[in-house]
Image (cartoon, rainbow, N blue to C red; front, side):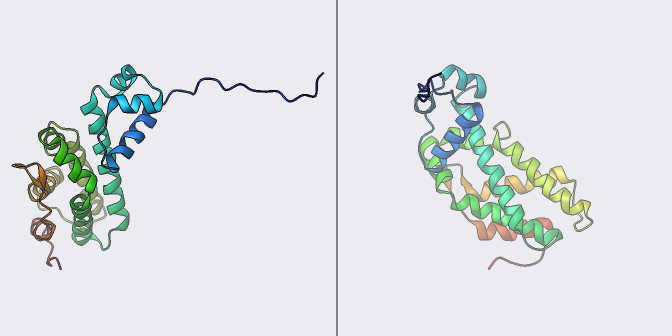
Length: 200
């Protein structure tokens, strides 16, 4: 038997998975780059047919990008929130709102995609709003379940009101841009939650 080392010739690179395509799209979004399906398929060695099979359309892929980044923002706000009961809820929501208002990626997307961006973000028929309502409801129900907060109405209605209120303060429908009036939003959410105190 020869003692010569075995030389392994490189084979074809494995094609990207659905998760890898999504992560690459998230990376482009966060770098304020256009999510281009052709560019993604060329970079990752996956066919357009696979991307469309996984996500349905370019808009479907962007919708998942928006949902993914929204979920990350909410999770971060929950981890960092202070206080209990209504005070904690207000702190979580304020962190989410300020994170959205400060997002260059979101501002760029709204500026470049305009009407379709608002439809995906601030419409019940889009992918983002229903997820945000669910996440906000879960946060409210957590505090309520521990006996630290008594919602003034059912949690689904309250969560929907919180999300729609944030949309009305953060997004300008007329020009598809960010308004970022987070201080007034903080105070109105405090009143809605029945929590005293004003933003500083």
